[in-house]
Image 1: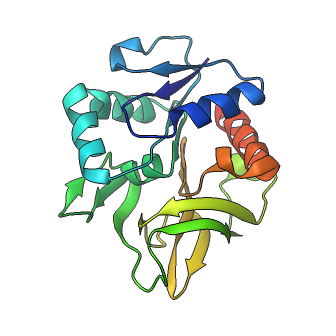
Image 2: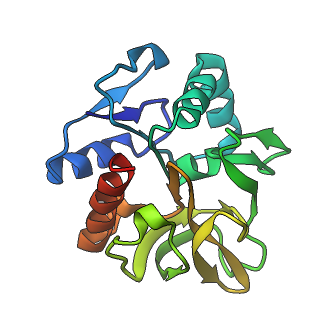
Length: 203
């Protein structure tokens, strides 16, 4: 079963519907105590602001649970705000600690012609880690955000808007993150979502 972390931050319904469409057994997990041995993978979704989301994850016990989950080698996928929360920190309204599973600090999109960055954009893919090399990669995905992770050591895909270039996708060992919304990116996004889950579960 795929566990979808439910912490009041947006797109959980869309993610659950996408997983159902892909024929995957998935359930929302409102509390870290809901984690069970039958969970094969966790999805950390999210739309909204980093500070309240990070604060809730910490106060609810999810931060510790997610770190332990990832450090034990089990797969974790972050989407949009969920990807940002995987990072070391964010500079949104001050400096706020993230989960520290992906290198780098989330920043505002400097040089973007318009904020938030909403709509379809091109992803340029780089070298994929060994476990993800068989993924079917598309070019166009759907974005909604005003903050992003600069290109860094864990970046596997980049996107540009105006003069702003940022990480569209990241990966480190058993942890993967997408700044875009695969669940809202049509067949291309659903194919990537399903393929990523299959690849992570096979690690």
